Image 1 (cartoon, rainbow, N blue to C red):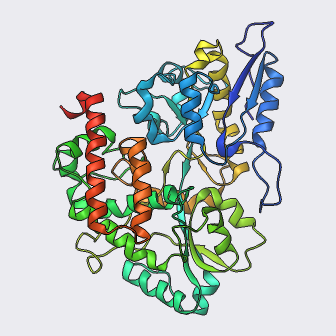
Image 2 (image 1 turned 30 degrees about the horizontal axis):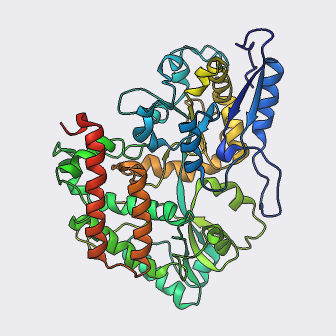
Length: 472
């Protein structure tokens, strides 16, 4: 393990670096935990503080909900921790607010915790570190991991019903019907507004949209050339491109492709758990683990839990890909789904501008270099068990995560900027609320699409007024 070097803090001074670690926050096990929670950050903290007696590392308790509202309040009020967890796509939205430190100069310097290192930046895989880049070309966030998702299925149940892993959407529907006819819920999923729609609603709309718009990607981008998938969601059609496309009416919620996406999602929802729009998102995994649902769509962050959960009494597997929507299902079908995966999961950290104002920036940078040294980072991620390292050196990484990263490498990720960061926070909050109403039968498709179109255009105009260079 890389040893901590001498502290950059001046002798006689004592500085505190507060770090919001999100899912890596160390804590004690509770009665609700199926497996041991992360704790390894405490080991790194102890090692660092021993070598740096002038620095104290303080972990901010992880919030169960309301993090984004809390973060905005902290950032706006100048009271944020030195290091905050930050969603990759939000950088485009917030980089010009003066909240974060431009990390380019520091990434160009050596990471002294990595032997023979010339620049801190080179320890990361290029798509990973580049994911923290804003439209102004500067990197404001350190990304250190790769995240994926997969459809977990009850293999014993499939075998009992004589079902095979589906390759196409039509085959998927046959499987789902057979499961439901047997009296079991086909898919455990939630579209509640305390986190369900924000997760599964986001995932499903994004990947279906990518397929529906496949032949129009070049037109939306304004190049009329094919747009490839990459490891970074939205890399080739980022926020500025999408804003311009909406303003110029090359993309919108009333497009036939967009409405087809909504129709497919609505049709699919018949196989979800009953009253999925009100089903607690915290119960989604439990329903599957208890054998009451045949499938569930989970993130790689659940990998450790699934592997070690004593509740699971059956053999299970992960679908090698999400079944393809062919032209038999939709005129816009015909290509495989992108992986719902990408660079940046639990290890996405931005350094608050307040760190410099408090005189803690050098110490904050040094701590980040220490925990991103590959041996330290990999040990930290392995302790969590749900994320693959985004470093060039992956020695010692957990091999059970390969199923998720393999899908990303093979199928890429969605090409458009995710809805969560495509426009404004107000827009996406409203969209998820209305999507839930639509899926629950409280709004008709055309009414939803028309309403969303107006909101989309208003949000795009607001951003275009704020960034006129985006629509030149």
